[in-house]
Amino acid sequence: MSSQLEQSFPKIKKEIILYALDYCRGDLNETKQILDFITQNKTPAQQQQYLIQLLRDFSFHFTKKTILDIWMKCNQIYADTLWNLKCLYSNLDVGQIKENNKLRIMREMCIYILGNILNSPINIKYRQINNDYLYQNLKRKCELLNVDIKQIWTDMQCNLTKFGFEKHDYYWFYNNTDNRKLARLWVCYDKWIHQQLMYCILPEIPRCVFMLKNKKWREYLILFDYEYRRIVLFNTKEEKVEVLQVGNPKKLSLEFNIHIQYYNDFDDVNTTNTTWAGLILNHSWYFRVISACEREAFSDACSVNNFVKCHYKKKKYICIFIFTYEQEFNSFYVIWKEGDKIYREAMNPYAMTLKQGIEHFKNKLQMKEGYNLGTDELTHSNYEFNTWKPPIASNVNKDVLLHDLYKYAPHYPNIQVYWKINAFFIVPYRHTIGIKRTNIIKSILNENVTNKVNIKPAFNPLLYERDLHKLKLIQDSCMVPKSSRNHMKQLLHEVIKNSYLLDLISKRPSRSEEDIKRQICYNENEVNKLVLDDKVLTILNELKILYHDDIHKQMGYPLQLYHICAILLYWVNHVIVNLETIRVLHGHERREEESIELYCGLKGVRLKDVKEIKAGYFISHVSTSDDIEVAKMYRSDQGC
Image 1 (tube, rainbow, N blue to C red):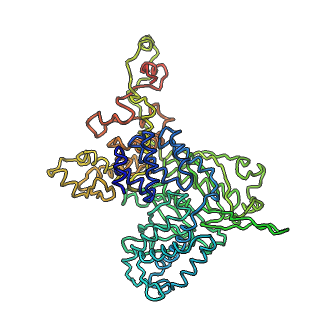
Image 2: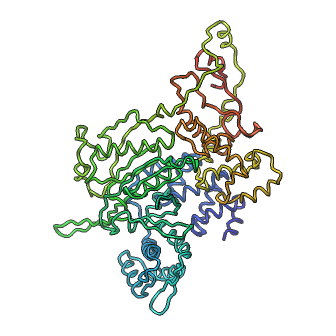
Image 3: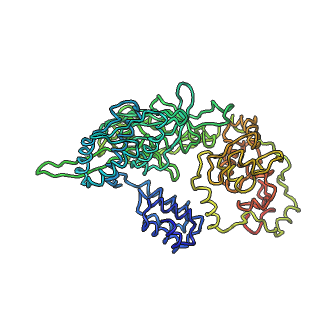
């Protein structure tokens, strides 16, 4: 099939064709439509994968035509298209999203069967299925949703065989009691869990977390089962499954007791050289992840609900609205927005007051900003109740329960409300550092300065690239999701891939580069297989020394090892990481006490060839001063 497409579209790379074919689930005609679109609009090679990524991420929210139209309006720029789609998504009514009924029936049954075995692998009750009972159960669901039972039944039997069931007479039996075979069931379970509506709505739900168990942190694969309000964890090393019942497993019941608390974990700084983004669920389960984005996605996954109005009936003098409550962990939640990101927060309206809710958000924002930038000291906050949805009277008593505020809202308590809170944070003074000023030109108001100001300066190439479209393409390469969760592996893999392996080693090795690559399991197409061996890649030892430097300690360890590595190498494909690092360090300077800012440029980079820096924004240093008259001396005719 792919060979036929390769012949029809010779100018499109094979991996793009396969990527499009996978997105279209093998549908040849649909794949041709996408490839025709790419060809007709002369989509650049780099942007082709980004386009398919957008179609994959948003196909459940919008029609293909809508996504493609926005893509063209944004001049085929990934970052701009992503921003516009997220803005549209923020106003999207989840209840309007329609689900394929065939997929729904099959998904619900497969999750039920696989979830029970994984939860109780030795319970015989879940290891044998009556063939007639299963058929009648599926038949009732099909009749209810007007679906043909024949195809559903054929697919169901095929799936049971894939799961490892065998049919004998009138029963299906799963005879494997070996825990080592749970990995096979987990793969099947993972597939069907990801067919849930919420996984389509929230594509950033984390796949891997660390959970505290018996006072030890263990790594787990994680899945959110919205059918039964439970979180299912799989320990790949021990091949054991943990099931956390987060709320009432009955679908039609309401749930208000989901509680999520953020914290920043510095306990392992000396052992793992890492700060963690932590989360406490229902005051009981402690989780941590490597990035704030993953923590926020975890929180969102626990907070979402989906309220769907099914249909309306009218009988003489009685009007009956029939509603179904599907796929939820918590029935009441607050939506809040930061930039282009939408967050959801589960709350109990019967136990939380308006004042407590506002304070909860401030504390959560404090943890978020503290982890990302080290800015965890609140300076001030403000909010206007009349801008909230639904609006609240400005003179409302803040000690009122949320229940009393929203009890008259349609469909309460299964609702979502919108709050807008502005909070501003800074780096605490104890974590800032002083910069001693040396050898910088101060105010020199004399004839020499006046004369120099009138001299036309030489060309200063601050923005050697002034092509906005080209700069946006560079931005796209930074924004597209990477193939590995491990930022350090991603960074070093790119360095090695671009033939700079020796930059990661302090002394010139006696062995060949190919031997070293084999030792660290380097594979050009597999980032996660790279082994970060500090005896081979000695730069890792340098990074640990810098991480524990007294200055970084005083700052409160705001940087991760990969931040330090990116700034040390100034790696061109990680411009965004360099910018993040400079931004964090810039915020820790005592700029109000000094007349110079240290973290505003780069010098002493490891790469020897200056040509390698050209993919960024600078090709030479830029001189200026904090005195306006002196700054004019350095101004060029290019607006710098």
